[in-house]
Amino acid sequence: MVTDRLTRGAGLESVELDGEAVVFEIATGRVHRLNATGAAIWRLVDGSRSAATIAASISPDRPSDIEQFIAELVDLGLVH
Image (cartoon, rainbow, N blue to C red; front, top):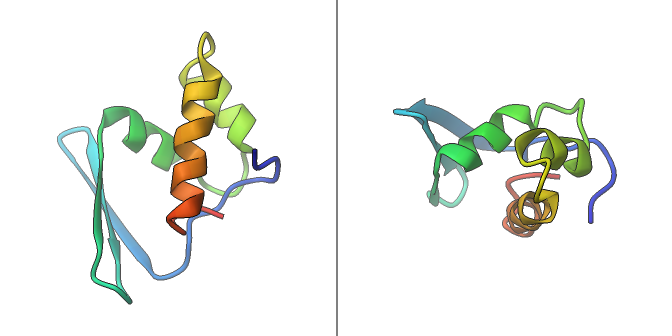
């Protein structure tokens, strides 16, 4: 799992709509829709928190679920 402070990938634009987030990859044209939990995670990816810190604040009882989702964001290149 990523232990460093997380930042958003370069070349992304995002907007929140009705509690969800839409992330647009400018170079590829790909669009990613994040549900309310994903949007909450996205808001916390600001360079000041690690995956573990974000996971604990979103879901203290099941942080591994959040860490797994963050790992997926990393795999997609949305988060570093």
